[in-house]
Amino acid sequence: MLILGIESSCDETGVALYDPEKGLLADALHSQIEMHRLYGGVVPELASRDHIRRVIPLINAVMDKAGKKPSDLSAVAVTEGPGLAGALLVGNSVAHGIGFALGVPVIGIHHLEGHLLSPLLSDNPPKFPFIALLVSGGHTQLMEVKGLGEYSVIGETLDDAVGEAFDKTAQALGKAYPGGPAVSAMADMGQSGVIDLPRPLLHSPDCNSSFSGLKTAVMNTIRKHSGPLTDEYKNDLARAFVDSVTEVLVAKSLRALKHYGYKSLVVAGGVSANKQLREALRSACGKRGVKVYFPPAALCTDNGAMIAAAAAAHLKEISEGASEKEDGFSIKPRWSLEESGRA
Ligand code: KG4
Ligand code: ZN
Image 1 (cartoon, helix red, strand yellow):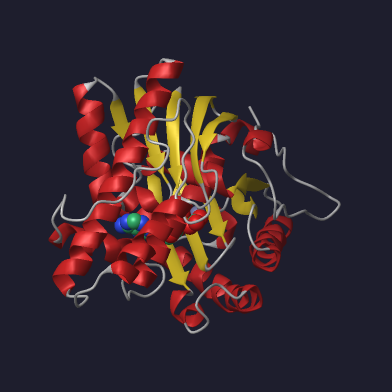
Image 2 (spheres, protein in one colour):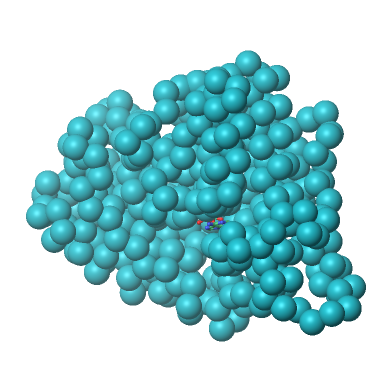
């Protein structure tokens, strides 16, 4: 069985070839970050046009890399939503075109389910059930995952996503979008406890979070600072920001694990690449006998491999050709993960 995965929901064109028995055979990615940087954020129309330019050459590249030809494909997996409508249309048109031409099923995957199941691509994959912490540029959610397709949100951010707070903090510290990795690197050089920032909702009796106030606190701290903005000062501020974020996310994850009685935590989404968050979660979970799982570092942000792997998890439907449609196809720019359940 060979699955082609296509991701085009935002500003990354990702494609991959995945064999459920052999694992990931090849993957390729084009990031549009440089193109959008000029405008300070993602420009949807430019994103769609760039996906059009990239997707076929990337598919050819993974085919070559894996030594496969189109007739070897058993199924095509594609991000059906949520995301930018025009960007989704590109990936879905290509996926359904290939599916129609080859007579193979096309499996529409929820983008967040792709992230959620991306630790299946690691050497140490998790088993159901588990609590999942999804931390990306657009989402910050804790989910109870009882099994494949059985996802319930048990807590989420009341305002900004944590990735967004990383990006805004990076901007305030003079770093380009998306600034998560830059803030993490600065925090590594900074010292804890020099600058004090709030821990929003740390003690609230639920699994919700809030990062908008923290982002404002970073900006206010910079504004009120009377001395020069030295590298040392910026690094200490990045450290204070990362300390606050990790403390809150660790506390909320532990609360969810305890309240719902789970011993496994899956962390996924772009921010799951964050070194300090990984270390803090590993240490806190280790002390409590909780197993914690992450995607491989290179597959934390958007990619085609996680979409193909999520489709592989739904193999039964693939073999039944459940998603083969004769009347065209749909995209779902707005789509809740809870409603996406298939199992
Ligand atoms: O999952 P993703 O690629 O896209 C969405 O679906 O949103 O996540 C992108 C987010 C950005 O906000 C980026 O700054 C953040 O993930 N990110 C990081 C790191 N790598 C990416 N944040 C903190 N530390 C990192 N190492
Ligand atoms: Zn994503």
